[in-house]
Image (tube, rainbow, N blue to C red; front, side):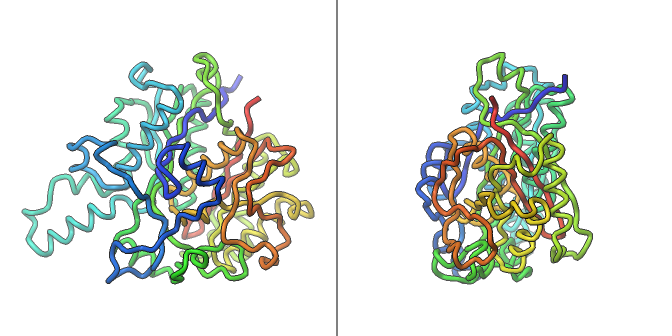
Length: 409
């Protein structure tokens, strides 16, 4: 029998809170955690962002690692420890070769890298630290997590912008089905630095709004772009047999994943949404389900009318006439788009929804104005049936990813 992969631990570092309890409480309260962005007032192309407040890296990361790593890795290290604790799993007690680490990254160690490049140009190469070579790059978090917890299973990083945050769960499921005991999986981002924001601004997709209620309104008639955010989530994915042997209560099962590419344009998505729809349909099929089995969709929610319309078109291709009756939610409207941290945070929301029987809301959305004919969730809802969730993510450049989670019963 093929081993089943289940989620047993969640670690969240996000604008909605540090730790699962605070994050879930803020979520159910519909608290918009997008706030005025004041870190770089003279150079910032945005006025608002989803910022992680109250994060003290010294409480989560050793002084040695603080010097050697970037904020995005601090988030990942903190979230990983939380996920292990939440799972009731001590990595030191496990076979280190049976535990793997897979993260997603979209931009790497922005703050660290910018600081070292500024030192290079202003003061010369002798002022650049040796840690520049290991702190900025995409795989830094995977490597540091593996080293800290002495995990010697497969270790890697996937880079596909926001879509990569779901792709890692497909990889985790493959590791489990091939005999792995557990996988630390997820992604965190810290893209709120001048150089990173300039790169994002070039896409001309970010909102310039100054009021949090207007800044990021996916699917709304007034949608004017997205707002970036920092943070994300790390998740423990474990074999069901391992979880049961130690009496753990899984949040959800990872049932099916699929990834596609638009092969259309280097920044713009395929206007017909065909490959996005194929990713969704394939993920559902690989989960052994049919579209009518899906009880909620956690949408990609680009926050622009054109891109949101493409996602709606893809949903209609997959669900047909039934699309209008399926609850669609985008709780990321509370935190902004976290790039590779967004998919893992959506998975955490979906897993919590399946455990508690509650669909979290989308904020700053007026469903009546949307005009898409879908059932958008704008307040916490307890549906009669909540067994299967579809999570969707898209990345700049045509990347599409879809993941199906199921309640464990």
